[in-house]
Image 1 (cartoon, rainbow, N blue to C red):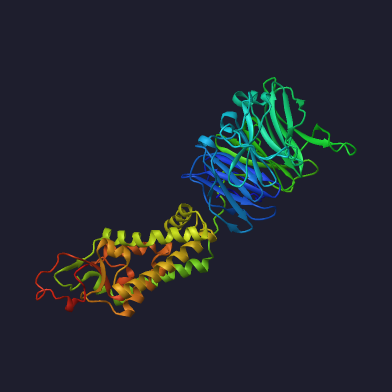
Image 2 (image 1 turned 180 degrees about the horizontal axis):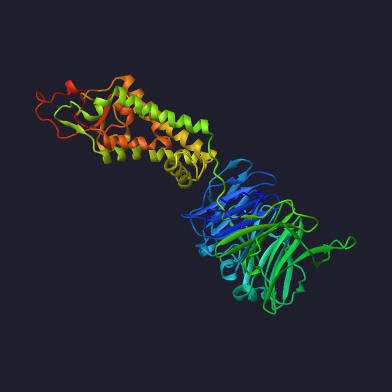
Length: 536
C-alpha cells in the first residue's frame, strides 16, 4: 500500500518499494497509484481521513483523472476504466466505453460529473456530434475541419465529439508539455505553450463556444501543470534559466469589480519540510487537495509528495511514497490465540489419531486412496468459482485479495505486510463459510461435491463405507480452520499422512478415495458392502 499521507516524518525508510507513482486529486479526494510487482496499488483518502486501499489495477496506467468521487483511468492500450469510492464503500474497476480505436486522450478534465478529453481530430471524426446550447446533436458525422485536435465528452456511457480545438494548441502535441485541459469556474480552459509563453483559451460549455485566448510570458519555460487550490486556478511552471532549473507558482487573481476577468499573479508557497536532494527536474505532477498544493517528485530511486499553502504554513506533511508503511499487526493476544489453536489441533491429531497417520486404511480391493493432485484439483474446482462469485458480489479485486491472503499465509505473525484489509477478510470468511456449507450438504447427499465428481473421487470411512452424518459435518466444520491463511500449513498433512488425509479427515476418520477398476464380479466386490456405487 502507498505511504500514509498524514505521516508526520520523512525519515529515510529501511525498506523501499520501487515503482512508478501516479497521483490525481480534486479538493476533497486524493488518489495514489503506485506500481508494484504485479500492478498498481491504488489508494484514496478524504481530508482528515485515513488512507483507504482500493482494488489494485493490473495493467500499465497512461492517464489518471479524479472526477467527483470517481477515479477515471486510461491504461496504455487505450482501455478506459472507472473506480468509484464513496465513504467506505468500495467497488471494483468498471470498464467504460473506449474511444474509437482505443486511442488515448491527450488530457482529461471534467465539468461537474461529465469528463471532457482532448483527442486527435481523426478520433473525434468517428464520434457522433454532441448536443450543445446552440442546438441538438446532429445526425451528420462530426467535422473537425483542419484542426488537428478536438474536444470530446463522455456522457451516458458514450463518447461525443464536442468541438474542434484551436489549431495552435497542436504545437504542444509532439514537443511540448501540453496541451492541458482544466476546469475553472464551470468553464473548460485549454492550455498550451509557445516558446516562452503559456497560452490559454476558455471554452464555455453552456454556450458552446471558445472565448478569446490570452498569454502568460514565462522566460525559460520548460514545463507547466494546471490545478485548483481552494477553487482558485493555479499554474505550476518549471523554468530553466542559464542552466539552472526553478519552479514558479502563479494564481489566478480576479478583481472584485471585474468578476469575468483576471490575471495570473506569481505567488510564494510555504511547503512542508522535504529532502534537500529533491530537484526541479524530478517534478512530475501538481494537484490541489484539502486547500493545499501538492507537488509530486519522482526520481530514479525516490518519490515524494510535498504539500504547501499560499496563505500560511501547511497543515500536511511531506510523504515518502516509496517508504513501506508500518504493518497493521494484530495484538499479541490474537497472535497467541492463533498459535494456540494451531498447536491444539496438532495435539489432538497426534493424541487421538496418531495411528491413523501411519496405518494404511482397510479399503476394499476396488478402492484406493486418491492422489494428492486429484484432491487438490477437486478442491480448486469447487473453491475458485465460489471465491470469484463472492468477489463479484462484494465488488473487490480478486487477484489483490488473494495476494493479501498469500502474504498472511507466508508471514502468519504479519510482521512485514500486516493484516489484509477488511474487505479482503470479509470476502475470504464469506467464501470459506459458503464452501464449507456447500461441501457438507453435497457430501451428506452424494458423498462428493461437484469437484469430486469431475475428478472421480468420493468421501468414505477408513473401511470404505459411507460416512456417518457426524463425520461429514466434522470434516467440513474443520475447513473453517484449515482454510484460514495462518493454518494453510496444515495442508502438508495430505502429503505426510499414509492415507493422504487432511486434518479434517484425520479427526473425522474419513478419507477421499478413487476407484482403481470397475468390478465385474459383484460377488467379489459387492457395492452393498461398501456403500460406494460403481459410477465413482
